[in-house]
Image (tube, rainbow, N blue to C red; front, top):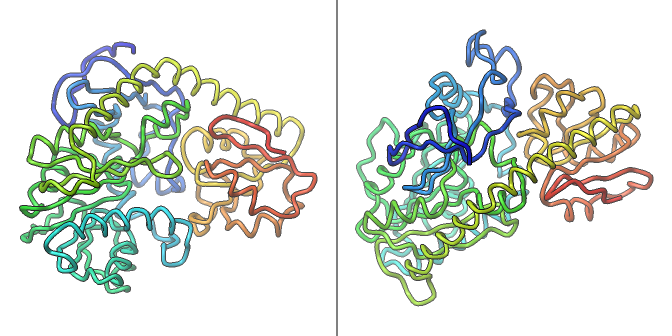
Length: 424
């Protein structure tokens, strides 16, 4: 790790941190906004290209955090992005792409609730509920006492259409929550939080005497082991490890009772309970010991990660350069197209990009970082097969995508993860 010119205070424990864990030399604007919206968010003098994006690791609380965490202009842009921008999203009621991972989380929640005395009458709070889909599904299973908190007005209204009670605000909301909750959970929200201390404090304060807290979040151990830099981009201001949460919650009367890596290895599900659960649940000491081992491996793997991440970027650049120099057209397939250095490279070589294909992003249109490219649904790919020569799969689910593709004879197909590889 290299030392920064001056110490920066950890946003959770306030300890000064001097060593930079990761320095990215290609900051990009990762959000689907056009130039006019960028200007309204930042003013004319703000350009993300001017920002050095560094990540620090706090030894005291095992938290990775971005240098942008103290940049007020950037934090205002995040508020705008989450609360105002997303107008034309595909809801989870319309798309089944997340059905399997959501089912896994619901099974965890239902299983943990069965060990509680409140049963179906338990009070449930979801932080960052988006369109309310998970709370709606839990309601179908008989869990009627639920509340969601969601900053985006469009998503909150969608949730209310389906009978989900929602407070349209950030967490903690300005409207004080007066009731306690038996289960509090969030799914891939915590890495976008700006005030982590206030966020976690409110979770603890709103938890009932026998309450549980479940968090699904990115798995930094996996990204670093793979040399994959796509976890580290501006919207992820904070990247807690499960040890961060284990240390915080155990100091406030919770046991770390469950830890599981998601099927694609990119996420971690962590469950904390004030009440010791049955033998089928992990013992807190074991979970924390495993977390410490994972953090140790992550820190030891940092030099290799930087080397692999640099090679990954170089390989991607060579691929785009080659496609462009041969006058070919490429289609990008998967959510990985929409953030990080992939979209930055696509911006450089936008003349050779014909489509960006992603089911969850089909309604975003032509706004993405001023690329004059339609973001379309997967079925459009085959309908427009004559408009592209090669397919670049930017998702970790490249095997499933390959199996779903038909009539691809004569087309070059590449995957970018975990590293660049030609599949056909």
